Image (cartoon, rainbow over all chains, first blue to last red; front, side, top):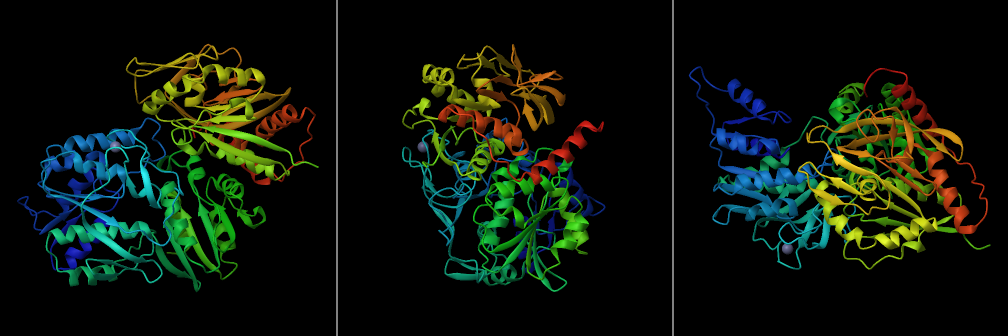
Length: 377
Length: 253
Ligand SMILES: [Zn+2]
């Protein structure tokens, strides 16, 4: 998403941009993007290359291309991290950054990310971004997350507040880790009006999640390093949308419907946060598959916070694991009589639109496209 | 009438929290509260005051990442005798994955490093040299609970191979078990279930959950508790669907 948004801002500024398609973020995906965009003599005609890069391929991609800015947003343990693979990954990137001297844009509020700013003390081009406490920030951690211990001295980190998951204002009481100079700070975050301020400029955006405020603040930090006029950035961000099931807002038979992909607890919690911050009555459809691309293990649904759903009158579940997710939601305290599981997606969608109450739809990886198709999108 | 309750202790929630294993406590709480019992959940982690293990009815610990296991082993070993007393006293222990391993003699890592266990139970665990090889997948066991056979559904994901088990939790109908292609899974005493099964384990196995609940209430209140039946229609549908999928097909998933 951030990758697309940076590209969109640069294009709005009349720059020629070559960018990879989301998800095509390994070395081969990036190479094929370049091949598609190069002349017969092998030259690429573009002002900017903007890539979304799989975390594991950062060192490789930077070796192959003279890229001059790296933006790192967050690290979450995904469902197959029983071996501490995320930690290994962070250490690998840290190792690469020891000799990296170009622009490095880091999320100051993720302890797993901001630690990377210390990898190379000689790098003068480190830029932290942060988002000021927003309305729904909490004193206690609401969703399972990372970053409980200081990566430098292993002391338990202290949080002033959590924005979501392990992202928030933290510091190490022992070694003062967490006290970064902030290059771009988003303030006055208002998810209802979908606005926030950076450097006294108010940005109106098309998204209403704290997660995307972070992403777009990173976009502002990045485009600012290339001296893109803030009026252009403002204009571009006011129009930037995604139409791929990532917080896609549509009308189905006249019923407002918000669809979001959720491959893991973090994605699901982001969706539920948006749902809970909306006071309207709504119905939720959760589609859960366990195909190879999803991972066979669906136990991550137990790390989703389903407690105290705001004004949800009915939940329909579907997908190959429709019953698993129904049990999960029931156990969280939601009235079992208002949960309807359907293994068959067609039946699920038919029953969902029996009422004209606003819909929220969460689908995991292989469930998303079949769901959109069932909605005739 | 005085309200009956159970005290549950959750060990190292901030370290052994992978893959929804906390869901086991949520399921216990749900099934107890639906029947009018009260549930107190306490947690203990590194740096907290020593818990009085015998004050609890159920003690739960889940699975964590390898590097955390060694930090944890060091802390846990301080309480070896008190934990052993609690087990002998009849406190129910539910130990998943990493915790299962830690209650044995030792865990030998990929690099040959030894993480000492509590040595309360006679088994030991060794990882296989190929880091990428793990027992991963859906698993179904046949388990005997108070002379009643029941099928237990879960998800295993472990590199460690556990040896020297005389009293397994169940026999494997689908999946691996304690080792690659093993016929048995886990470790079982009347008041101890130690297993690799995630899912979380109790979410799809109401009979197993009720076994733990009944055992704990019977012991605490010294009576033969009759558990009120609950509406398990989602669980039953889920079990029927998954058992059919795993046991009646040749597909690996
Ligand atoms: Zn520190």
